[in-house]
Figure 1: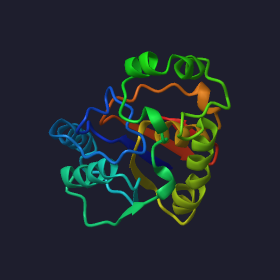
Figure 2: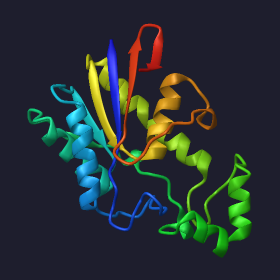
Figure 3: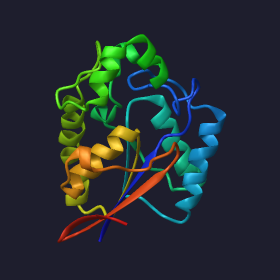
Figure 4: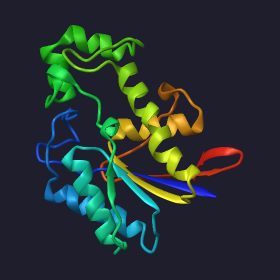
Length: 197
């Protein structure tokens, strides 16, 4: 049995809970540090064969705090460049209310969930999903193939959804997940495939 534990980073300076910080490299806030320590406590006693994170400091610092909370033996935290959150472009740092007020046409296109939607001056939704899912093979799946039984990935909400969708064999749009900041999600895999635990 293989297990993948996906943890969403904690709250940031500037409030990731309400603001669109995708490509912006914002730091964890004290509240976010507490959130990921709590996630770590929920993993007490568990040991991981590999730990992955994004290059953004909110995710990397969250990984450090999760490992510290469970007093994990020293292990390298491996950065996967493609595990960055989506780039919201001109909307970076805005709330959804600000997007609707400042760019009503763009907001309308976003709400239609058109497959080819691209954030203004940012990343296309499909390109983001493809980027993340293409990186799951050479990182997470490769490590399981090499004998790992439990892996931790501390990343971003969109990255968690894209990763889980790939492993579960579901379209990204069909996988709705409640993932508050500091939340964790477990997937278990065997010869039959992957399931949400």
